[in-house]
Length: 370
Image 1 (cartoon, rainbow, N blue to C red):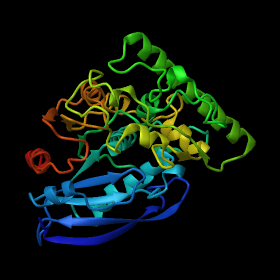
Image 2: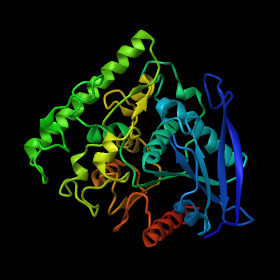
Image 3: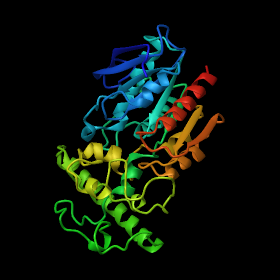
Image 4: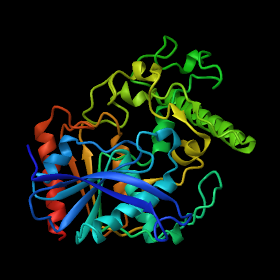
């Protein structure tokens, strides 16, 4: 599958309209065009902290006639430093760049996985800015940033928030952050002290409460570091221990038991790399602390009326279907649509039919709203 044109594009997040603190941050992206003449509408494909890169979905969309600009924020390849509120300045620069420099009449945000939450948060703050500081109390008045709302939102297998996801997957058996080897065997999902799935409700309630307690403990450590002026990164061990991945009766869909989108959950949990494994105190509060983070797609879609397409992957091995359905149910938009792709995994790897179905749906939705 080939596209008509691919070219580098660049902009700067900065200046009087995009950054109230006058930051000037160089940003790069890749514009994929379906032909010599641009389409009327454009999908802005966001990456919250990853670097832009080609995925099969991007080329599949462009092959169907809709141009796509795949971009990242200032935190490309540096998730440990990512403060989500500040990344909205970069998204705003890209939206304006797509309209004013590239000349697209309609700009839709395409949010896959974590970028769905970022898209929702951006649209909320561009529509009615409320943020005046980041969670660590650093001033940032988004009302002064000149953020322009996008024309529509598309969520593909998008969770409600990184904070909520981590609260469900963090390992509660870790008893002390400074001594991750000391474990509570009664909460060790991969040990012999926990019965095999399916898990009863009493165990799950205890387990979930212990997960939230660990999140609060790490948040307290983050605040302590901030108060002491220690802003260097720290390690969060054990961040892949969700019973959902071992027990298919929990929030059921077509996912395989004993697997997650990164592989075998136990191996991922012990890996030196993983979700939220390294973070600064500011980034922890912004992204991962369920009590401090401002980011939640359910809150955002309840405050905006933008056209919305929500796609649930029927065999998603990363995002529980409850996340996707809760977001859609909360959306206040009168123009909202829900679609399930049967058998689709989180990344559509090795699933050309599912990939084609998603691309068809995404392009049809954009075409209907020219």
